[in-house]
Length: 132
Image 1 (cartoon, rainbow, N blue to C red):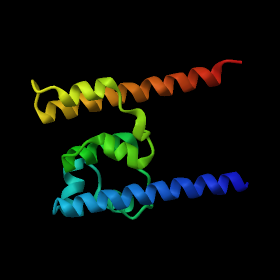
Image 2: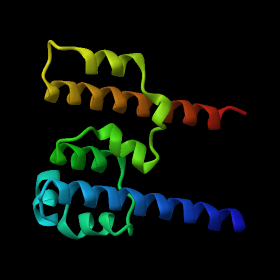
Image 3: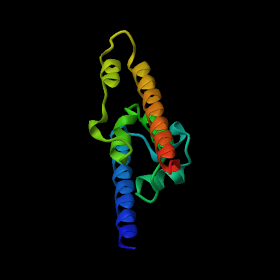
């Protein structure tokens, strides 16, 4: 029971942290909650709940918010606890360092790469729980 309470406290803290960070980024960009919700394709009440730490958004929603704020989805993934800060790879470094593509193209490639990594991790976890 104590472990459940500890886990719930960690999840709540992470939700509040990511929500506060999103709010700060939105305010720095001088965008209203309504405007960001519209750009990100989420409802205004849902975004408000995220910012207040009442909801913890999925990786997909974080990606949509990051795109709307014109920032790296990886930053939000790290803040939300989805990625570890040290998980940046040679692929990431190569994409960031490539001068032949635009910043937007770099972001799309990084989002796709991150998505593939997350899918592979989920598959590995499923396989490890299925094995006797």
